[in-house]
Image 1 (cartoon, rainbow, N blue to C red):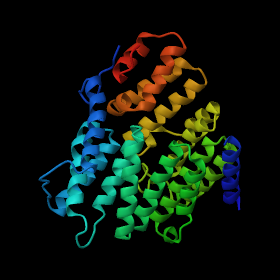
Image 2 (tube, helix red, strand yellow):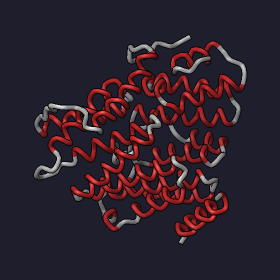
Image 3 (cartoon, one colour):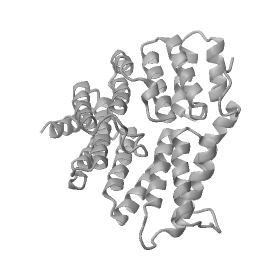
Length: 345
């Protein structure tokens, strides 16, 4: 009943509205920015089928490569991922349709979608997510179908299609295929409910967001402290739900609540470098909205320390730095950060 009310509220709203530190990668900042650009360009070309004479290794080699691609993503190693992920997409297409589909094409496109969303490449993201959905449905993989739905919901939210985003996420969470005692199925439901909570936050409904987050928290507590589905949405656990709450409180317009939520997260307990970078970027966003410039810069520098390739390439970080440059005094630290992310001070 509450979910139907949330959807009804959204429908009504829509109608009414008719000195640089040493970087651990050993790369220069400009190389990190270029790695993000190369990743997008190579994934695009792979998706468009522009590579000829694709060599298709054995299934064992391909799945080893997929595991390494996930490792690259979790480590925010864009340069390595720019080589590995397009190669996987090409090889997966070349062998698609064979007997015993092992989900390689679906996993490759789901990973590509997450990467493209992070780099704000919405057009390619839609393409990748829809291909993932079709491949998952053809392979009869309910868990992967649900994850593709979650990615589509994220893209719909980013397009400000809030009613559609909420409908996609909640319909997928309530699908009978995700019912059962398997931890992975419960974790996927939790990820979908989290996505719905974030969408509700974007509409300004903080109470609805917290209610849905509470639902996700209850699922996570039943599963225990270990992260489940690490390769789907960064893992699902009580800690990752709390991390998601930081973003959601920011989106709902309450930076003080976002910072309070962040205090309950120990960054070292997060399951990957990518999640830790997300934490510090979300904290920086909250400080920026609260006009705490120095704290914002410190949080961005922490994100950069953990994940320089991601921090230098992400449009969200560039936007934060640009805002700092035009909204107040500039410092040596801020000018150095701006140079490293490719923003002119």
